[in-house]
Each structure stands twice: as structure tokens, then as C-alpha cells.
Amino acid sequence: MERDRTNTPNKINHIGIAVRDLDAAVAMWQLGLGLAAVQVVEMPERGIKIAFLPCGEATIELVAPLGEWGEISKFLDERGPGLHHLCLEVENLQAASDLAQAQGLRLIGSEAKLGAEGYPVRFLHPKSTGGPLVELLGKNG
Ligand code: CO
Image (cartoon, rainbow, N blue to C red):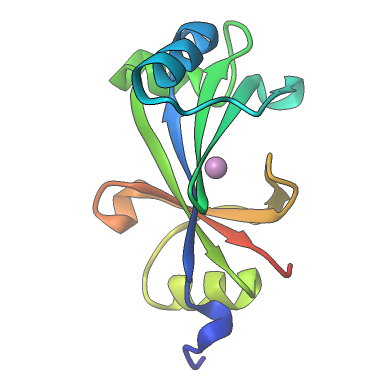
């Protein structure tokens, strides 16, 4: 597969940060840095709630557990609060995912899911990227 504009990331869409206490984290980012949460979304099916803090063209997403379980709970238990993932935006998610996989990167799960931003996303396993959990977001599917 050829690499072209449609499967090359062209923007950092958001950076996900794992936090235990969403209200405290939102207050810190607001008071300390002047970045305001424009929206808070609860996703019970994933056991998380997310605060969206726009920062230029990208967004800081503070992700906290809704209860005892959830996507972020294990991460918090094992590694504590901090940088959780980096989300890169692509035009064509399928093409970008196929190309990453063909180059030896490991996709998590078997298909794209709808992300909190309303676009389909795939995740690349941190063990295959040299550390960071990388999310690919398809702006046009
Ligand atoms: Co994300």
C-alpha cells in the first residue's frame, strides 16, 4: 500500500491524560494553565468520563474512571495518573491502520470503534510503538 496524504497523520487530534479525580484535574488545568473544559462526557459503557479542554487545534482530554472498573482503572492502578495516549488524525482510518499493521505495528481489537469525539478510532499497542499508546482517528471514516 502506498503512503499518501489520506493515510498519513496530519494533525494531533487530542492527548489523553489519565486522572483519578476529574473535578480536581479540571480545576488544576483551568487555574494553573487557563485551559477550560468546554464539555464533560460520561461513557458508562466504557466506565470513563472525559473532560475536553481545547488547546489550539488539539484538545487535552482528561480521562477519569466512572467507578471501580473501566478502561482507565487498570492504567491508573499500574502506572498512576499521567499521559495515557496520543491521538493522530488521518483522512482514511482503514488505509492508515492497514499500513501500520503491514509495517509491524500491532492494532488493538479487530475493528474500529466510535471514539468519544464521534469519529472511528483504532489503537496501536504501546509495545509495538516503543512506548506510547497511539490512537488513530479517521476524520472521513
Ligand atoms: Co483518545
